[in-house]
Structures are given as structure tokens and as C-alpha cells.
Image (cartoon, rainbow, N blue to C red; front, side, top):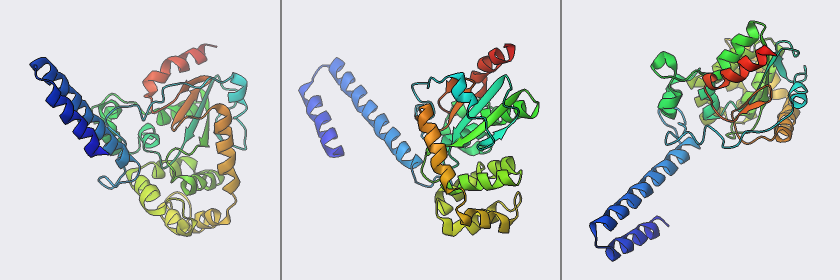
Length: 280
């Protein structure tokens, strides 16, 4: 397939003799190389270890930001704020944050801000402020708003990379113990990314490995029993059903009330929506 592409380019080059046309062909070849390079980067993102992680494509931010925002009603958003879901804050808050996420998704890690090396690999636009960049990860800022009593937050699973189901169940188990954020931050670290994508994946027989990794937050035996019980199997399907109803397009996907930010947007991009909601 690739040989046919390059043969086509050679035929065109032979048929053009002017310097202007030669420059045009050179540009086409260069573009082809960039496309191939971007494709290889994308393939890397889907399963090849890169410095202990699976790096997201750094060619463009297209993989991080979906082209079309989802339109929902405020009633749909408010309906998500129930004890049946992973929820924090008062559901009658002026600012309602919703995150559709997958612990195995590279750009969910980018948005968490707990895996700075992956942020750097994702591209300059995602390099954290503390590392000399301009990116302000949204998840920690949302948590700050919730902790201050100014917002409420719901976390829901959506399949964005394929390896995050067991890790998601660990988050449900952690919520039982009041340790959601502690487990969340461990899973969203570089070590967590490697564990979820390269070692454990969705294999329940490796629940012990997952539990051991999370032992600083939840007792190993408690986490292992919870993961092996299958008690949260239906929650995976339930969260995905909600995601489809909302119009899920990819992870991460955030809502600030009805404003959708489909991708790993900087919190700076979300601030106008937050400020507008606080005025109401």
C-alpha cells in the first residue's frame, strides 16, 4: 500500500519539469511524510510502550479536542446529579461539572494534571504551567471549586481507550470508602497509566495487582474483594448508556452546566462558562 503511494509520487515527478511544479511535488511529498508520521504517532497511542507509557499523538490536538460540542438541556445535566453516580458537592450548585472519562485514556490523564510527562509528550499546548507551559488541567480546578462549595461534580465512565474498565471499578470501590480522589490520582499518575494499559488492563484475575497498587488509599484486601465481586459490572454498562444518551463522542468530555468541552481543554477555556454560571 505504501509502495503504491510512493510510486504514484515518482510518476508525477517524472511528468513535471518546471521548478514550480517540482516545488509543488516536494511539498506534496513532505505532506505525505507528515501524514505517515502522524499515523505512526496515533498507532503508538493505541498500544505501544513509549518511555513506560503509551504516548498520545503530538502531531495535532485533534485527538484531544473533538470537532463538535454536544448540545444538552440543563434538565439532562441536573438529572446526572444523583447518589447513584459518583458525585461531589451540592446538586443545586450554580456550577455543575460533568466529566466523562476513562482511566486508560491518554488525554484523560492530560486533563487530570497528575501525569506531567504525558502532558509534555502530548504537545506544547498541553505542557503544564508548573513545567513552563500554559496548560491548566481542568480536573484539579473543578475539585477546588467543589471543595470551596461553589460547584458540584459528577464522574462517569465512557470507553475512550479500551483498557479502563477494571480501573473504573476500582474508582467505584474507592468511592464506597470515601477515597475516590486518592485512587483517582494514583490511577492518573504515570505509574497508574502503565499499570492500567500495559499490565492489568481489564483482566479481573489481576485484581490483586490493582489492589496492591492502590494500597496507600484503600486496604488491599478490601479493594481486591470489591473488584473480584463483580458488584460494579452493571455500572460500566449504565455509565456508557448515559454517555450515549448525552451524545458521547470521545474522552475526555466535560460539561460546565450545558456548555460542552469535548476534549482535554485547558480550564482557562472553561472559565468564561464558569463565571457566567456564577452570575446567575
